[in-house]
Length: 425
Ligand code: ATP
Ligand code: MG
Image 1 (spheres, rainbow, N blue to C red):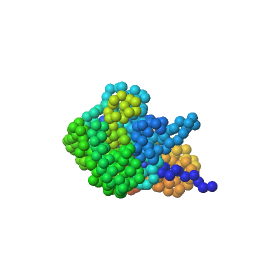
Image 2: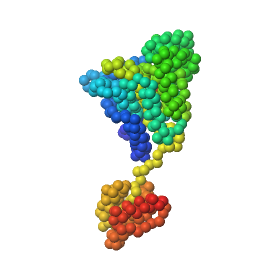
Image 3: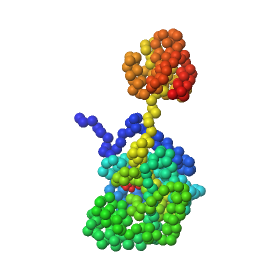
């Protein structure tokens, strides 16, 4: 029988890569904490209705990408395809909407979309997301952008570009929608089947289509920024001003509309250097009607989602992926059966002192142990045989250059010698 394999579009993260995930997660948590965002954790599946109502029935996510199933009681459940609707559900349910504003939350977790797996696009993917509620000003939009920017900066990422746009509020959207519909109606024969359907249901979505023909047609379509009401216009101008004074470069891109129905006003993306289809590392925007749409009070919101594998791809491009630091500081090798316990306990004492120390667990020959220590990248080895135990002294050998030194078989002395050696190298 064939061995079972992981589902298409999912990922096993093994120890040779998981340290990169941990490194990124810790940078993200640090950046979020610096501007007062607290972590929220919410279920991996929710009632399907949440996404139908929250994300929008005419979006790709709801139309094509959801993992929906019936549970044993016949309720329709969906693996969360995105985080914002879940966060909004949770703050309404837990009464956080009633607390002092602004409310700042972040999350890191798995999301699920039934998509064609390819580079930068998988069926289970990890997103870092941040959401800010109860602040209407452009300063709030800017804070989210600055947070995403801080994550990139703290990881050393240089090759991402910020693109911003405003898609207007419900007031200005109506006129824009009409202009857009008229325009696309006149080019209907060149649109894909899906977009022809969108003409009636949601013409804005056509701007987001990835078919080459639709992209071509959309190039001359009316631009949202030309239809903004005075309030949306001044909000957008203020955002640009804040970004400029904070030293964050941006480009206004009228083609950014984002693939979710809940956005109002500001939308933005950070796009990676390759310019390829899966190069949007981070996407977000303002959603001032979502909370009330899901049954909560009138509460504004702004947020973003950042895909961790796409972030990793730009980090690789920029040469800023971290090196593994899982290698032991020291490997203690027993050279005979009598030394095994001593070596094992010495490694334990060194770990108690904060070092990464290992010893033999497999009863291997000295030669095999040294080969293992070398492969594991141990910085030092220390061989313990009968004579070393009897003399109470052993040789601390640096594995990557430097002088070997005799030390007492004593955890404190070994630790000092390692620290001293590391300082000198
Ligand atoms: P795309 O246009 O690439 O499909 P999207 O508009 O669907 O992206 P959002 O829903 O805004 O993306 O999600 C925010 C971020 O999450 C994306 O910019 C991306 O980094 C990441 N992301 C979205 N879908 C996937 C996926 N299937 N696999 C990996 N990362 C993803
Ligand atoms: Mg998508």
